[in-house]
Length: 89
Length: 246
Image 1: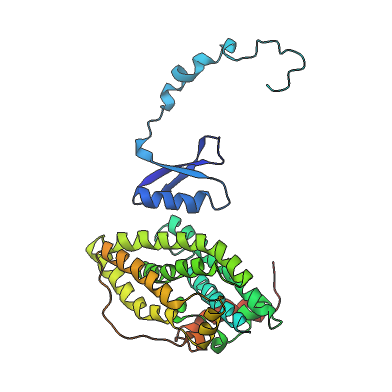
Image 2 (image 1 turned 45 degrees about the horizontal axis):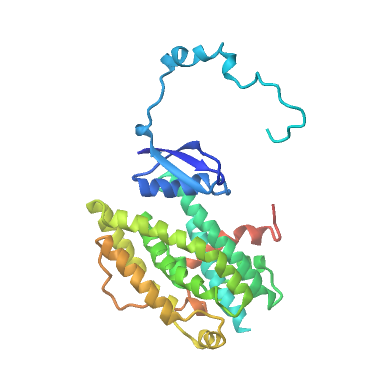
């Protein structure tokens, strides 16, 4: 059974997808993930998710899904004048 | 120094088990398990290095001299560490037996009067806890798995079982080091070990092997037939190219 592995590299950050692995059940999947993906101190928390449970967007829908955002620059927060002397932004 | 002999015993245990486990490289049932077993082998090698270096510091030998230039009769590891890997079930049986001993061993040694042993134990106890978790996971799955996995898991356990009891022997040296607060008390270790393995064996629907045979001799250098072959492989490079490094 195929599992997708997500690692949180440190507190405060999100879990990030790092790869996949084979395991017979969730318990072993978590342990395999520990051995394969955190052996160089990459993480402080692990998620494993059965690959078949992930619902993915389809490559055929790519245009309809993502292209419409291409010409909408106004959605980016780049139209503000930053006051002088502002350091923590 | 008694503590040097004691450190050497613990170090030899780790070194020889690490060497045995590393033979699973590229041979485990799945890639994931390959990495898991090699991680465990490396944990043992790491502990062995500290312990051998410490033991050698009393006699002016370094870790390489102790690991690669001693002969069979000079190694003091318990016999269970050197047993053939057998199939995956046998290796998991050996892992269960050894890890269920090493967890309470390192726990006890964190309170040792010997500072270095306490230091090594502090690191090793976390590693051993994971080794035990790994072994328990597999023993339960294989024991309580298919008819074939159950049969082979039981066969592995039957093979390894008699060798476990050497781990709990007390000789004059251990008694002396217990008295000075340095060594772990084997009776207490065996109690903890017994409760762990009994629970796992029952959960795995296996049975406790019924035998009174108690092979021993590793601590005084009397090893099993396969041990010479293990040393030949482990020591070959260093003996052919003295001082080789990378």
